[in-house]
Image (cartoon, rainbow, N blue to C red):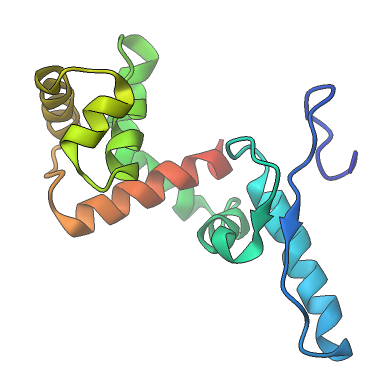
Length: 156
């Protein structure tokens, strides 16, 4: 554990990843490697008691690409202006975008989750769209934003 997560805070537990049964003894080594890599990919996710390895597929892919320069370039291209905004301005807008995407673009639910009135949420979403020069209603844009937000954990 210490080798895998040397920078974890004292008392913090590494993520537990639950994997399914291997199809046979020949597959056990590959399944264990997959679970170990998924645990690395889960490092830094919201604190949960455990993760199903299948729910970490995107994070695992991004973790495997972490040292490839194209991943960092993608994050910068898709959400760079928003990250730059949040370094210098308040309130930060990245959490608003994360909650908005987590609620599949449903504004009433997003506003409730953020404890904002709807007009304040609309203003923040309009600022995000302006900063990124994009349409937050476009499915391809939403997909790119979600992937970029996940990928930024792996490219720091």
